[in-house]
Image (cartoon, rainbow, N blue to C red; front, side, top):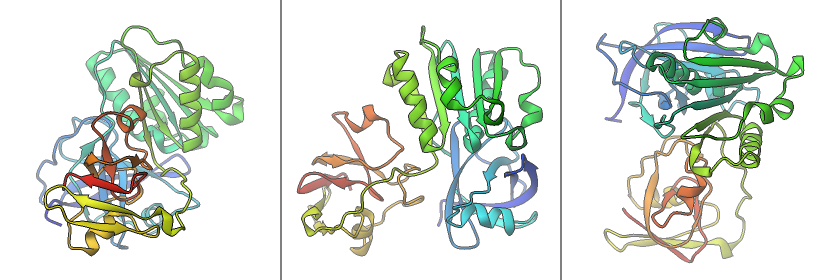
Amino acid sequence: MSNVLEVIVDGIWRQGKRSLAVRLVAEDGAPLPGWQPGAHIDVHLPCGIIRQYSLTGACTAADSYLICVAREEASRGGSRYIHETLRPGQRLLISPPRNLFALQEADRVLLLAAGIGITPLYAMALHLEAAGRPFELHYYVKSRAEVAFIRELTQPLSHGVCVIHRSDDGESPRLTLADAISAPDGSTRLYACGPAGFMAAVREAASAMGWPETRIHTEAFQPLVMPVATTEAETFTVTLASSGASWPVPANKSIAQVLMDNGIAVPLSCEMGICGACLTPVIDGVVDHRDTVQSEAEKTAASQHIALCCSRSKSGNVVIDL
């Protein structure tokens, strides 16, 4: 674990009734690596698991990182540990920031967040406001009590508009997304982050309004629900372009697991296809994409990458650039 940073939990405080903000500082007091809105870090929790959290707040704060974690009822351990066990002064290991959801040049930006999906988009809103670039932020929650960063998001803005939609006030995404997503003009770009159902609704509404796929940018917090492979017929072979070595990948193992079983280092992190750490170029073969990191355009491009932790092959052999 050479590519990790040692940090200390400098503060924990409530953000709405379901979320906790956590401020992290370098153990030696030095500045932390810079980042841009949309970036996330891997957090190595003392309970033995690694979770990905978006950096939020102002990206100009070089002395600390801020994350915000919702309490999930179906937690696999990450949010439960942070809400029940994590304390100020505790030491953690984190990865340097990496960004698969970066802001791109645009005349105007439309930001759509649901629930804890606000974290990367709040950072984007702050950045756009500071840069004097026009934007709209639509933030969907069940009730006012669940709003994170409510003080900051209700302050007057000079270059943007922030609208908080509450389902208990009749403003659920089902009823208001069509109004929030206007027809695209110029180089307007749309960024969305939230639960899978919300993301699907955003894409459907944007498509109906004529948004091209290349101007829709999303980040998911949950993996795709895929059927579990159970038959021997679904076994395929993975081949390394560098050495020609190849191994069968059975239905009950991922490509990453097979590679590691044979002594090949794989840069794993989330192991669910949502972080991009293990994306690897494909030399030959037809990929069965099961990640939520890449866009549909990337998954159908001539030059493709495969998520070794979750994706499979539709062809009998897939050759990867390792």
